[in-house]
Length: 202
Image (cartoon, rainbow, N blue to C red; front, side, top):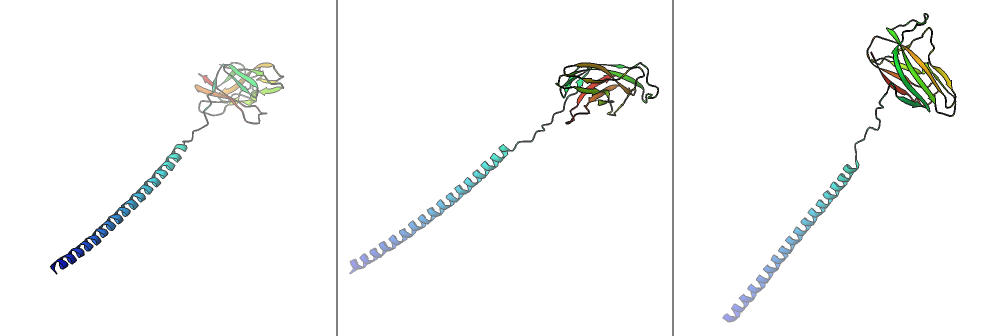
């Protein structure tokens, strides 16, 4: 009888132990599943962040600062030749004009200067050039008037193709030392092309 009771107790303990082990295994399995789920979520988030960084990095690489395309054009000097609409224009010299000024057009400034010019028409057509197409600015940027000599005429020529001309420009200028600017723009120009020379004067 005692053996039977002991056998029954042993069997009950075995059954309870088996049930307890199954619960622990189930609990461990659930913990493992939860851990795997968290790792997968973290990996997914990391992958998303990496993708965002790559996209942002790509955008940063493609964005480049804009560069100013416009560059300042350096003015020519006395002796330099500039070409406007196929016509070569050279400033060959500058001097104070000591000749007689037209009595009906007296000077308004200190004195007059004469600028020597050579022109060559390299086009296939006639080209008209006149002193009134030239403008002189003083060192402060003010436009100056033309001077009108009494015994000389300023440059004015209707050049055939391939021909050249020499002439002079006369301006009424103040007693200001510094760098003057001479601008040329043809009255027949459609695009406003200009030639600019710097003229140091004392």
